[in-house]
Length: 243
Length: 243
Image (cartoon, rainbow over all chains, first blue to last red; front, side, top):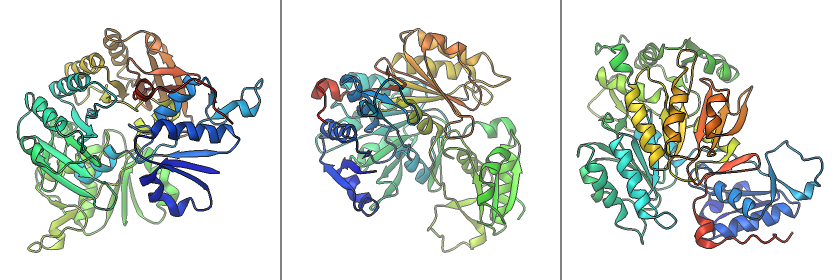
């Protein structure tokens, strides 16, 4: 890799690994610029990586790469494909390297909230109308999905999480366990489980992911989990296990 | 780690890494037995790992571990916690190691289908009533979630995928791109993108994950992606990029 492009914070997290490479770090809300810069570098016959936190395909930069290439009509192929009639410099090879998204890192710290059907919903209404988000919250709550909330709150967006809580409370018990994970696997990690009715009192910011249990999710000691249904079907006995 | 417990297929995939350890490999539908065996080993003062494919918390074994411990009233703690008044052998320390779930591995091979809100739904009605699954498909389609279908089809469950297709077609255009990924990152990997109306003709089995695009998902060359909305807000220009 010749060039690494990314959001400042993520570049700092991996700086020891990218020593000696050309590094282009940009700030928040510079997403479009960042992707255009990366494509520019890659079309200039350099190999270029864009780094994301978590998985680049879950609420992250991968979508914008394809969107930009489509708008600019750039020929892109998965690795290993070649169009014989085109010169190499007219083709961009794009490879997405999957990672561990916040919904998996966070779930692992809570226990196992996602072992049954779930919906991931971003509460950011900067790029999506609030009515669309509201309908998704409403139906996900009604159809008993575990609900993972991305971008639950920021300095400028302070009321959306409480609104989401109220919508979900219409369909789900107030004691439903809610897992709150900030900075999973990073410095200042914080993990908390609260009942749904107390969600509005919890400490939540942009680096937090919120896991609202389904009607079957349970808290057990310091964990929360969502049963898949094995116990009902196969009858796990409550006798002591022999040591 | 002293002992490794897992489904035969997964044990074979990691056998070179677990040489010299006690290995307990069990077959399909032995999930309850597998977890009980692992807990038995761990309570017997051995450290024991249960292995899953993908992420252990997404439709996998982690939930059953907590469910079993709760039913048997076993005291469990996250790593690093200790109850002073209990002896070590009365406590099970449980740590879930997150991984890359099929929904991320598959998405990365398709492009970026999951960069906006999505719902994960298992089509297996062995442990969940079909009416519940049907309602989830219905509302997820109506509220325009990208829909990830786990366990879409098996030898014994042949009609559910076509039923799901029909439900989603009520709310979504027949040309909606659908990504079909079999055995992501494993031998015999296969990636295909078809229009929703052709989904019932595609080759799909239990090792396949299906990604049904939302109304905004697009196919571009050999990729599919779901725009987050940047282009609409920030106006990405369709001029050529300077090299």
